[in-house]
Image 1 (cartoon, rainbow, N blue to C red):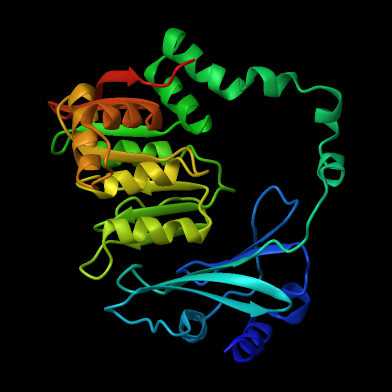
Image 2: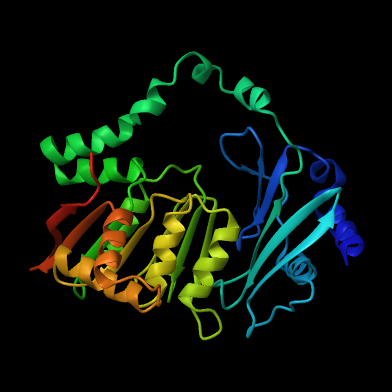
Length: 323
């Protein structure tokens, strides 16, 4: 399987790219665009040549290996050796994506580096580590400053830029999705965004995006677990309804801060209680009070919205994050 797959990958992407020792990730989005990540680069780069849907589907079938993909099994993961490296693959096809094919290929780190080699790339920390001692974060300071002294828009924008985890709460037609999309529009265009929804509504403006869709063959929990293999910078969840809340909180706590999701409740306090109740459904073994504290530690701010006349406006903000 590995020899056949290596030949296919070589034909599609070229030996020069695949043999690059700095190459760490190749991702295909449903729009056919291919993005790569090299160690040392600040952001992912888009390749000039997109893949056709037929070529993408054929490659996805090969990547799935012994786990054939279909409408009833739209998610698959595999591991294989090629180009003197171990690779991990995650594949998603319809109905887990609205159209097209998505996959992520991640190369396992093979090179061992000494402490001196690692520190050679961090000369500022060799001289001064005060930022590490005190956890200096200017963008986070800006959030608290806006909360105390600025307007709501400035606060929300600062929270997004500082990668705070935001829970948007509200009743029916209160503007939850509208405000989520407005927050998402503030995210840097270089970030890779993953969304998970029952029906695709969020539609990020960022060019490097994959929208996963819940179906009878791919639950919210399934998609959240697969999502982590698609190399997200941020994860956006349309709405939390059940045990998948625990998977979402776990995801944003595993190196993917800046997540935004919504919940259908009438107040920030009710939102926190509802979130804890949903996490309980995942049978974590924690007590209710422990789960509440866990939720408090994962969510940085809860914003409550309400429909008032023809307006969908914020009516309460609860900051859970400690300065």
